[in-house]
Length: 76
Image (cartoon, rainbow, N blue to C red; front, side, top):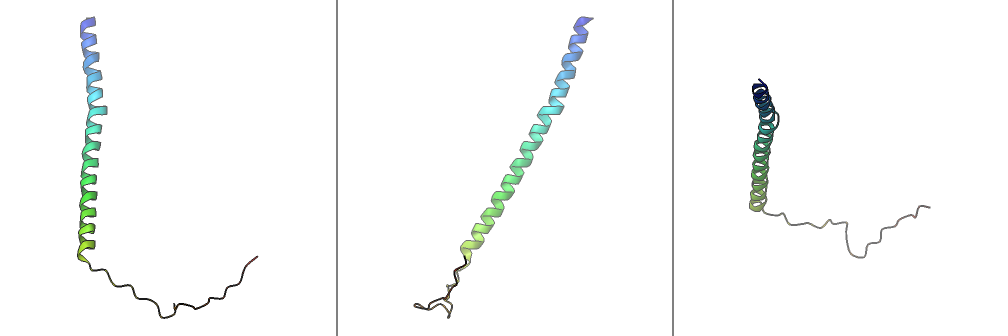
């Protein structure tokens, strides 16, 4: 009788361990892998997009000339 009770408890704890620990961990691992691959794909697309675009030349503003003095007031 005790043998069947212990066997039943073993099956119960094994069932709880599998469905409350093993399965959620595998689901979370699968989800994290898919999100990481998605993130890597987006980053590669962005890098590819930046590589194909030509950088625009930086134009200097006509106001900024060398030797111009900008007056400022000191706040106390």
